[in-house]
Length: 288
Image (cartoon, rainbow, N blue to C red):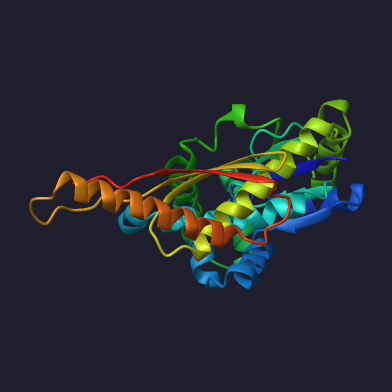
């Protein structure tokens, strides 16, 4: 049993390879579109916004408000719920970055020559060669900027993948067979430790998504989980001075906000299963 992520540039036959792998192994095949639909249903965020979050390079406003990270947390939470069941093939942009540091995840990158990608797009959408090239080039640039901003990673870096397959040198069936063979190696089988790692990530991501979706206070939140023991670090925004502030008053405001934030976080995660103990680390607001 394993999880397979298939990353690819647009029109590189990644979807077709993923579906073939799922058919051979009998694994569930999950796409980005399915995750977006599920996140929309659970967190009630317009699909248009979710699509932008996992597709477009973030705007200046989104960088300031961290709106992009909020929507990504919803999609990651949905993906990890599927990952807990194993036997999964997920294909989509940034797929390998949403499931970090899990030993039974096989990360695959499908690459194809630009000429082949252009021809494939023309075949599907009946557009000119120039239009196809313009679209694919823009898409590649956008995806690169997306990954660099959110994860500080270059998605073309071969070190991010366990396998890189040049689809121009083989057919879809052969590429799928190579992936299936690798997925059944001992290196990518589930262990108690790797299963726990998925469970911890799933709980942590669900908590973070619930906080992002529920809390009204603008917080920068980090969640770590270990066997039901949860650590939530919440950093409050700075408070702008409007004049002279008495130190005692400032301290009182900080302590009051810390208490209010702790209560808000507790309410947001109430009812989430697999939580045994929660430690809150509230970074109080500073005056600017």
